[in-house]
Length: 523
Image (tube, rainbow, N blue to C red; front, side):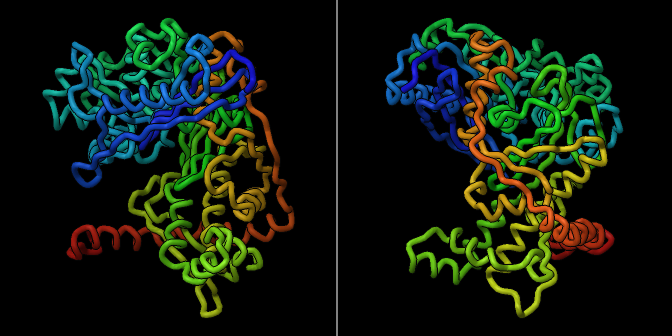
């Protein structure tokens, strides 16, 4: 084990908290996790008990220290990333007044629609398009209209991030990461967009938000005596401001300079890149001011369903692959990759639209749905699998095209997540986008990113960029095949042309099903 000092990174995810301890070179010493529950009291709702976040962190912290053999005195800094748009209402005694409304909760759809109808200039951050029901103003407006006793009685309305920082230090702060990415805060324009909040009658929530907005890596305060005793750590250990999980993960992948872009894969895809100019436009989110690095701007894109579609196909339709995997004692995904490897580019004319759970960007359309067209009796299981993966890659390239049209030119992709295990998939991404794809030694970018912020807060490095230079290490890079890229462009064009042709039919059908079969074409 490398010598200290050591830094603790904490990742507060949707289903669990993970703790990682790293040395100053970014080498992981230990990871430990602890789950917590997620409740869905109504369709479209999602809530959690903040006290369970804390008890899980206590357990994970003590487990990590015990397994690593590192003493509390050797931990020189702490920081944390969390889910974003996870809203907590606190009373004057710093007790939460109801379960937290977490990021995936979409109960505020009507409030989001009305916020979008204001046409306020602050809506540049969501590309002047539809406002997400997930974002903070939507949920704050829902609270005011549906639970006024909670809203009016709340001294603080804050994020998971802010709640946990207060729990660790006793201080109330907000992260520039959350406020710029999901609250419409823009330092270039003076901070809070008061006109937007006033337009929907929640200007008073600005007084309930934490009043100090800190950069990531800035010291909030020292670990309190009470928190230190619970976590098994040292009182006074510097606690650095953290940020949104996916964006801190991008830091952990080394995305701290213009033109570099993180592709965080899993059941969905998130794209996060840096630019030197404040660009805005339809079809992508941002560019957010100072969200990751002071003086830079962050652009964001996303695909709702990616790895989840691959898993859907494998679990429900890959009959031959599952049988062959059992026979050979292999992972079914490896068999599917074998089947797809020799299928030609474009899957013999089969095009898949990956909007199985709607579209995040470029359309922000919850009523969009998936499609598979070009089917013939010659298509095999391998064709279908390859076409699904290609469709995901086309969706990523479509977002990149929109970004390029708005003067953001991605030059290099750094990737993390489960799909990176498929060499075929990663080569497709590289070929379709005509960009090199790099892989880092530590794939868990969120925990490493938080540890890097802890190192900056502890003074081990003067800034995030220097922490990246010393703690993030590239393991390998895939280069694109130029001829494959040229051949793919025909199919990317067909992919892009499909949604506008099918949009109204998708919407009509989704509404018909939602109404129990009673909707009309005019609805």
